[in-house]
Length: 246
Image (cartoon, rainbow, N blue to C red):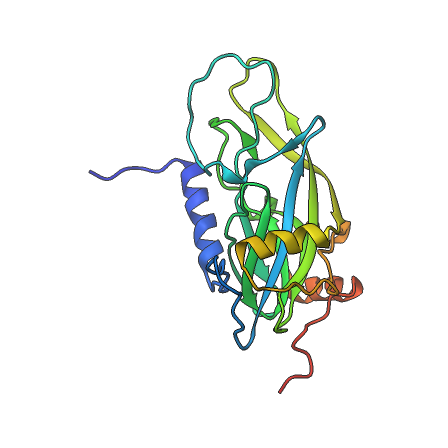
């Protein structure tokens, strides 16, 4: 039997296909031993924190799901479910879904050297409402830009604070969340402590460029232009770390 897809499901499948075309390699190194050193690759360590108007949310240890479920009448908006993060390698024009951070928002990613955009690739929501699903390419929200070099030490790129707001009424089964603010702060001592627990014997380079957030990055994925994006990145001081190499 042939199953017909709804328009929403079809859009979601097309979006996944777009994400997985020309995939950049992004992996989470194996824990329990020192971090590897691979030619042409670098490792970034940081944290992503989600803050609503009342308190910090910790969505990273929840499932990313689509569908609908019934629930009791809620007196508060349901917690944000795990957003689907993705990265775009600007210089190579490749993208991929990023490994989810741990329960507290910490991550350690190995990627090829270059410049990257980190963005949300789903409609952020709480609960499992019918509106849950992947965003269209035109509505993917850039959170930050960052740079990866192939230095021997993993580099610390800071804590990305994402302020969110729920669109929700009492009795609704789900809440739609929107990004209302983006900020970057630094906590290198906490980062080194986390790294030492996960990757014993590894040292962190804290003298590296942090996440960069800017209003000029918000809509670069709408009618995307590589040349325009590179101009914006360079105006923000994010230059190709491979420049000058043979």
